[in-house]
Structures are given as C-alpha cells and as structure tokens.
Length: 300
Image (cartoon, rainbow, N blue to C red; front, side, top):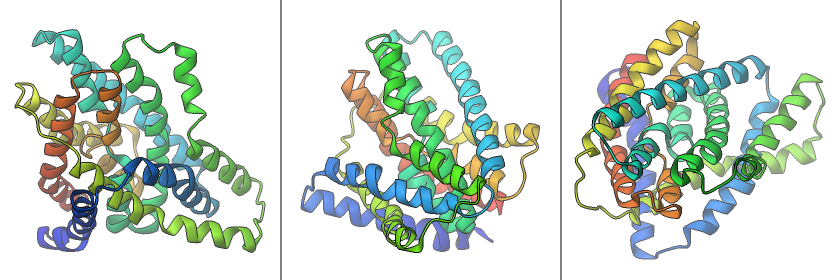
C-alpha cells in the first residue's frame, strides 16, 4: 500500500463522514449528548458483544490490557518530567496531561482500524477502547480534579461503562462455548452495525462545536507528544512485548490517535484550561491526517 492508497482507501472515507457530522453540527446544531448516549449505552455495547462472541479473544484482551497500562504509564512519566522541567503550574500541567495521555480510540480509532485492518482490526480496537474508557473515567478525572473526586467515586464510574459488561459477557459466552440464539444475535448485530458510522458523525458534530483559543506555548509540545512521540513509544513497546500481526498494528495506531474529545469535556467540567485542551483536540485531529498516513504506510 502506497501513500496515495492510504489517503484514498482509509483516511478519505473517514474524514468525509467526519465532514458530514461537522456540517450537520454547524447547520442544524443537533444535541450531541443524546447521540453520545445512544452510541455509548446502546450501539457500541451491541457491536462489542457481537464482535467478541466470535473467536478466541482472551489472549488479545490480556495483551491489550498490559500494553495500554504500560504505555499510559510511560507517557505519564515523560509528560510529568517535561512539565516540571518547563515549570508548568498545576493547572497547566493537568491540561497538558489530559491532552497527551488520552486518545480518540473510539470515534476515530475504531473506524480507522476497521478500514485499515478489517474485522480483526475492529475487535482489537474495541478492546483498546474499553481499556481506554476505564483509564479515562479514573486517571483523567483524577488529573483534572486533583482530588476533587474521591477514589471510590472514580472507581464507581468504571461500572457505569456498558462496554465493560458487554466484553465480560461476550468473553464468558465465548469461553464456555455458549450459543446465543439467532433471534437475539440478529437485532444486536443490526444495532452494532450502526455504531461506527454514528460515532464518526458524532465526532464531526463535536468538532464543529470546538472553539479555537489563543495559542499557548505548550501547544506544540502537546502535539509532538501526541502525534510523534506516542507512535515511537508504541513501536518500541510492542517490540519489547513481542506483539505481532494485526494486534501490533492496532495497538500502535490506537495509541497514536489525536487527543480524545472526552478529555476536553473533563477539562471543562473541572476547569483545567479547557481552551487549551480544546485547541489541542482540534489541531491534533487535523494534523493526524498526515501523521497517521505515514504511520499506516509504515505498518502496512
């Protein structure tokens, strides 16, 4: 696959759908929270459950879990050290960490892995997204609030994520070879098939509502960490772990995605320089066209 093919076959279809959502957000101003609830609580759990029913996913789940927690730990240490060297204040450090540690693994990462790596890429990307959601509801909230939320409250949030239950249920059924009746699988599959396009349109809507703020000096550093340093760390880490094939490609791609939209929402909730985080989200998403094209060319 050459660079032109990567753009035409993988990135262009994705950004075309993002564009539909962006225009919809500008022209009609739909209520994105309701669409997000539909996606998170209905469509994605259906997609996860039906995808994880097929085949042995236990080994890839374990590898993905180890990878994402080690990767996040490495990036956290590098980010904190950089913040201390540059003498960022506490609030800016929180915003910087939010912009660097949390990727758009769902709305952007899952469809990208689907287009690039097929069904196997989808399943592995969904596993990554599940672990990413757990980290988002714990570490991201802690970073933004710096103690405003108690540990029990953060842990409680994990159990509000339907994806966790969908994965656990599918893994149990798969492990014990439980056959789910077709009259249940068929409607779940139909609902799940809508998850990826709806998530992509939703990202476009959310980007249409993201406001550009004045340039902050650390902005360039956030972009470099998110789009340049992250792929390098991912490549080295997968080599050290001995991960191969499609799983390796998915792990590297997912950890190289632009900053997560939810990082901006959390920054707003806890007033952790939301203007800075929103700017990083928008800029990193646009620039990811180039960085991900090069990365996909390397991986394929």
